[in-house]
Image (cartoon, rainbow over all chains, first blue to last red; front, side, top):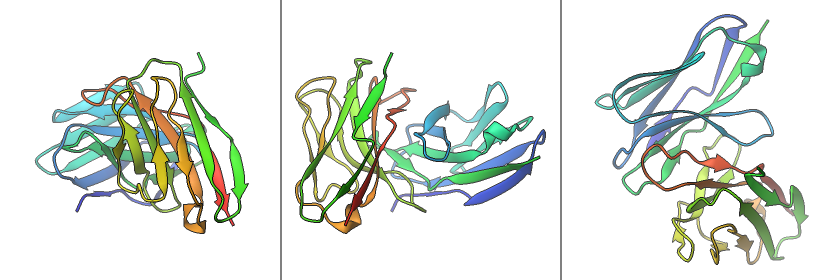
Length: 109
Length: 114
C-alpha cells in the first residue's frame, strides 16, 4: 500500500528553527509537495522537490532523498503566523497526490 | 482574480437526501480534483478530471459522482447522503497533472450529514 508518515504535532519557539520530517512509500514517484494549512482554511502550496537535494525559498527550505524515501521541511526564524499544519504529499505513478495526515506546528512566544 | 470558489460554505443535510457541491475556477486550469479531509487523516481523493469531458475515480469514490462539462466547473454530487460522508470537502485545480504544477485549493465546504 501507499503510505506517507509525518509527526502528528510539533512545538517550537518563536525565532527558532524547526524541521518537519516526512517519509513515504508509494507506487512510483513523480515529485513531492509541501503545503501549509491554517486551521479552518484551505491548503496553500509551499514547495516542490523532484530531484535529490535542497530547495530554498526564503525562510522555508525543503529537502528530498529519493533513495531513502525521505523529505523534510525546514522553517527558519519562526513567526507566530507559522502556527499551522504542514502537509506532505507525493505524486505517484498515476500522477495523483498521496497525502500525509499533516503535522500541526505550535509556535510558542 | 477569484481563483477557485466553492458553494455552499457549509451545509447540514439529512441522511438519504441528495446534494451537489459546486466548484468553479477561473484560472483556465485543465485538471480539477475533489478531496475530503477528515480529522487525523490525510486529504483523500474522491474524483478527478484531467481535462474537460473526462473524469476518473480516486481513492474513495463510492457514493459520489462528478461531471466536467466545461473547463471551469466541476460539481460533486452525493446521490443519497450517509453520516460517514460528514467531512470537509475541498475542490482543487492545477494547470496540468505533471511536472511542478501545484494544486490550488478552494475554501472548502463543511458538510454534516445527520
